[in-house]
Structure formats: structure tokens, C-alpha cells
Length: 311
Image (cartoon, rainbow, N blue to C red; front, top):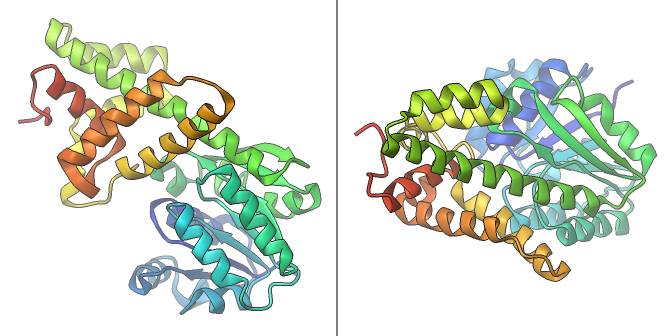
């Protein structure tokens, strides 16, 4: 008999992952979902097939009490810490917590100790990929923790929420977060590179469409996706109808963690420092609607162009 699963956190990423668990997880019981804003969970449950496929929990404790494996995905260290502390107030003996959040490695290690101290089990599983990849089940999962626990999680990763796993079985949970944060600096620098390239292409007369042809031919993948978002203005137009694909605030959170890790290790990350500065400018321009791709808008402003490229 398959275990009872629960998913806590129905944001851009958690919602996409939960949807794929419902659709492709081979569950024999409805997935239990919880979100702090209950109406969000209720809307998703209805869209995913109703009571036969999804049950909405009224609280964290309600979700955890009925589940064997509990997935979590929260936006920052404070949110996931509060959620786990709430979760372990009840009986969690033998329950497996799987955290998909992007947080500091030391936060993950503390979460693992908190769960284990109450008789529960813990696996870290941060993910690489944008919300669209979460929705389509094309993420990359980084799994860390005791091998026998990682093996319990794998049936719900590759082929369900992810296209591939990076397996750190036997490694401390915090190791997965080290990779996630250092890996995210590649994404930050990619967006910075694209923003500068598109701005230079416009101002030199090359043209952004010609640059985009090079990007799609030479690099493809996320390079092409972010290049498209910049060209079509999605880095600012989506703020009128949808949440940021990757908020500037969360990108700064990740950059801050990476810079802190680098400082402790005696490493300089000048490019990440520039990205963080530009993200701070995105927040000044767009507030909580600011998107990581808004770095392009900031580079444009520094170059004498308007933030918006379609006006």
C-alpha cells in the first residue's frame, strides 16, 4: 500500500510540484494539501480533481497528522522554520519530511535536527527550475539524507516532479542546499549576462532579435527562456496579472545566502554582488512585483533607456 502523502505550501513552485504528484505519483489516496491562505489550496484542489484526488487540510497539524510523507516548499528560512516547528508539536514519530525549500544550509540542518528530535525523519530536496518547469514536471531535484530515506522519496521525484535527480544519498541534508545556492548564482549571472547583452544589442544596432537567434542556437534552455521573457516584456508586464516567476526578493535571499557562504569560506563573488545590487534596484522600481528578469530593466536604465522595453 502506498504511503499517504501531504504537501504544505501551494506557491508557484510547491503548487506545481503538488499538481504533478496528484497526476503522476501513482497515489492510492488523495494528496493532502495545505496553504496558509486556505482559498488558494481550495482552488487548486478543485482544479486537480476534487475530493477524489485532493483533500485540503485546515492546518499544518491537520496535514501532518494524517500523512506518512510530508513535502514542504516555503519561500524563506523564517517561513519553513515556523512551519516545521508547528508540525512537530504533534506526533511525528516515523513520519518523513521532505523539504523542497531554498534556504541556508544551516537552516536545513536545524530543521533535520528538529524533526529527528521528535522521532521523525528528514530529507532535503531543493529543486532547480522555474515555476513553468515545476508545473510541467521538469525540475531537477537534489536529494540528500540517509540513503534508505532518499529511496523512499525517489518514486515522487524523477518522472513525477522532476526530469532528473542529483543524488547525494548518505550526505548531510545541508550539502544539497550548498549546491542549490551555488547553483543559483549561475542563474543570477546568466540573467545579468542576458540583460547586459540585450541592452548592448539594442544600443549598438545589432538588434535584440538577432542576439536572440544566437542565444537560442548556441545555448537554448533557460538562456533562451529568459531571453524570450526579456524580449516580450514579461519581466514587467506579468506584474499586472500574475506573481513574479522568480521574485527579486527571493533571488536576493538566495544571493545573500550565497554571499554569506562565500565570505565564510574566504571567496569573493563579485558578479553575484553586482546581481544583488541590480536586484535591489528592481525592488525599488517594482516593489514586491519585481522579477529576477527585471535586471534587464535596471541595466537598460543605467544605459539611458526606459525600464520597460515595449513602451
